[in-house]
Image (cartoon, rainbow, N blue to C red; front, side, top):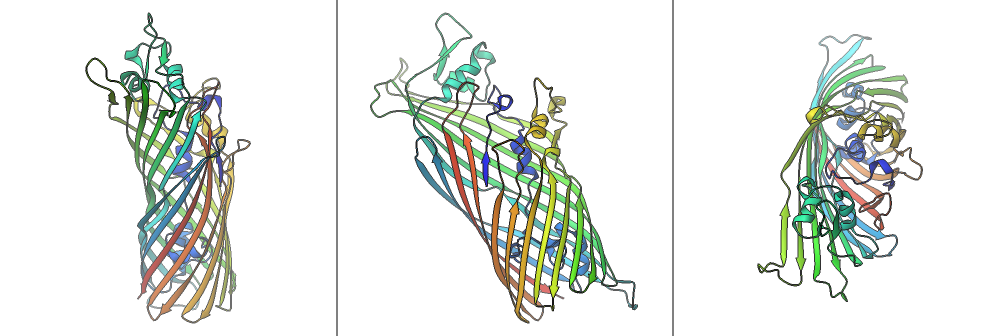
Length: 496
């Protein structure tokens, strides 16, 4: 995955530290259907197959494929290894992180008519459960030794023309309160940084969170040829980020200033609802065709955020202090968000009940994501001369396709081998930006009487490029982040 944060003039850092961004819209809109181990091993390609609880989230018609009731549970272990390379300085830092969680809980009830006819409706099924849709977990460290610019320069630019009492209380005022920037002698609205020396820079990022869906689904099977289903999904998102940026003097400096750190904390939680409709048709016993449509998910989000700054000097002031600390107020904000509409087209070959080949192609237009109904009447829509978040979303993102493919080979009546590949498409229309990436997976499954167990492993290599800060005149060094994601997943289930 190659993701570049483009330096567009209308999305540069200004006076507001916390705001809904196009990056948030993309984070909340992306979903990966791999709750069960069987689905994960086969690349999530279950839109035409059915008979798997995660497949119900892709195409609810797959629920009608079940011929017995079922209870399943899935757990996963994630390991991420993040390497951050400073493109200009050629320095790199590594960080890794483990996490353990629940990715699926599902119950399926199969109901057949008491008197089964030769044709007509064969069964009516109901399902309820949970699938994890995304995981936001990352630890990353990066640095910029002997950086040619400073974040303090950005804060000076943002402060000029403002009285100290009107500075951004989450950012520039903290620098003013810890003596990192100050007004020029004889002025109350022009500023200067504590130092103009070349500084060493470093940053750490700790992200946590998830996206998941509780669903209720109904489906019917007509003569084992045509399957139709619908579902109601209640989705939840939780995301938390702690970012610490620091700058310090070089070892040969004789400056009175030593170092400072700037910490930003952000937490967002949202709940939303959507509907899904789907169908599966079997023109032949060996061929299955599927299609489904997902309405947008309509979310309500609440945010909490604050920031702090600490500075250190080599000599004490007249009160005996050489270190200073300032903290922002506790910020809160609420708004609504709508994800894009999504459509999936699927096909599967089932050959002699020994070999399964399946593929899903998912269409989604990320430029249709939208923020609305913010606090204080904010609608997130701007003008051509002063674009806001929704305008940036439309200008930055595009319609794209996600391809999922899977294979299953039943080696014995009780044991199956699986493999999968997924290609997630590029969401960006901006030239030079590409967030596409590949997922490789594999696993096996074991069946014995009414019990089954599935195991899966998946791997993705995700690349990002970003800068610490930017203005129309200068930017920090560019950081290239490579995040290798490994996941092991196990599912236990019972049929009855």
